[in-house]
Image (cartoon, rainbow, N blue to C red; front, side, top):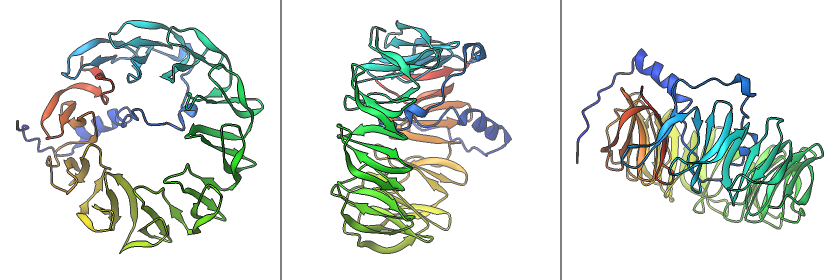
Length: 396
C-alpha cells in the first residue's frame, strides 16, 4: 500500500480560513437518493445578478483527468447520462462527452427524473422538458418537484396537487403542502396537520398528526399531543405515543428519547440493551452511532458497544467506512473500529463509488478504501463521482 506523506497538520488560521472558504460548497452529494425538499431549493436570482465565476467547473474521469473542460460557472453531478450546467445566468444540459444537448436558456434546471426534467423560465414559472429540450408540460406552476412513481407535485394558487407525465391533474391542488410519492404514498399537509394519501388522492392516514414520516418497515412514525410513537397502515397504535423523540426503524430497531436519555427499541417497543445515551442515530450497515458526554462510538443491533465512545465526532458508515474526528482532525475507520487512516485530514466526506473526498493542506483530493491517495489534491473543489464523472474546480 502506497503511504501518504505524513500530514501532521496543525489546525491553524490558514486551514480554518480554507475550511470556511470551501466548506459551504463541499457538502456531501445526495447522489440518487430521494430529495423530498428539492422543490424548495433556492432559485437562481435574475439574470443580471450573475457574474462570471472566478473558478470554473468541469469534470474529471476516474483517473482524475479533466475530460470536460472547466468552462461553466456552476454545474451539477451527472444523472441518467446528463448534467445540469450554468453559463452566467442560464442553465442547460450536457452529456457525458461534454456535448451541449440542451442550450443554457433557463433560470433554473434540475436533473432528469423518469425521462423529464424540471425547469424554470425567467418569469418564475416551472414546467417539464424531455431529453431533446422539447417542452412536454407547459410553464404553468409556481413550484414543482421531480417526477417520482410517475407523478409530480405541483403548486398553484389553489394549493398543492399532483400531475401525471402528460401534465394532467391526477390529484387537484388542495393541500397546504405535499411531498413526493414513495411506494404509492405521499405525505401531505391539510389544516396544519399531516397525513398520507394514495395515488388517487384518498387519505389512507387521516390528516390529524403534528408530524408523520413515510413508513419504515411498515410502521409510520407520528407525533400527536407533542409525543411520538408508531402506528400501522390501519392507523392502529403499535408503539404508544410516549416519547419526546423517535427516529425511523432500520433493521428492526429505532432510537427513542424521553427527557435527555436515548435508547434503542425493537418493533414491539421493548428496550434493546441497558445503556442510555445523549444521542443515537442509525449509522448504516448494522451500526448505530451513540454519544455520551461529548464522546462518540458505535453499537451493533443487540446494543453491544463495538467501537468505544472516544471520538469527538463520527460519520455514518458508507461502503464499510466511517469518518471519525480526533484531536480536531479526521480519519476513517472500518465497521469494527479499526483505523484505516490516522486522523490527519482537515475534513473528510463519505465514501461513494469507492472514493472519499479529503481535505489536504494543498486542496481537496480523493482517497480509496485502503486509505491510499487516488486523486491528488489538485482542486479547489471536487465532488463525488456519479456515472464515472466528478465535477471539479481546478486550481488556476
